[in-house]
Image (cartoon, rainbow over all chains, first blue to last red; front, side):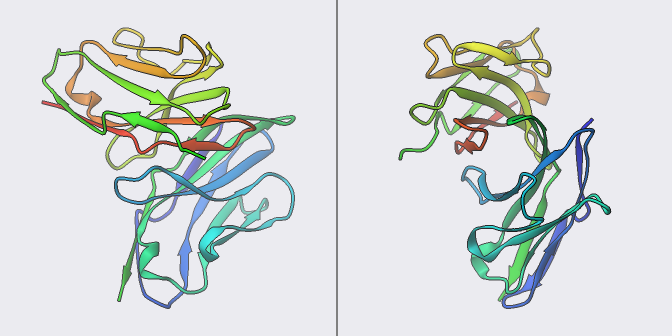
Length: 116
Length: 111
């Protein structure tokens, strides 16, 4: 079975400081992992994805995540937070059957607040 | 390219009433999904279509929820009758080669 645990429901940082959003996953198959961002009243937007290539994945807006199989983790980081990064972030896992992605399983989300 | 369109954006109904949501996916995307996102939780898949056929509806409460995608393009999700616990954001997504693109959602409040 696939599942995702986002270890923090809320994270607050000051503008210009690093961001760390933590995610642990469980998967019975070779997983694909994603981070999505959701700004108020907007649709979910894909930040980055891991699908079995390089374990360090770079995404949009300066975000990156590292797949660590031994720790079953896929933490999201950014060196320097910007006010526009304030949003809800979702870690997502999907199993892969060959080249086909299975159902997406979302974590409960982490609300990121950025203080000026 | 245009994104996934959904309407209405907001809907308030009383319990036991019926409601319908509409989704227009990105042109050419064969796969369409409906998700339910309850406040404070991540989205949960309700139903997945491949063209006009259902691939996965295992988490759809079929006693009150129904969905169709008759011509393999637009889709409608219906709730009849609505319950208080159906209050949520209903998200539509579409995909071509696995990556899902989400619409802005319909926020449903059941009073």
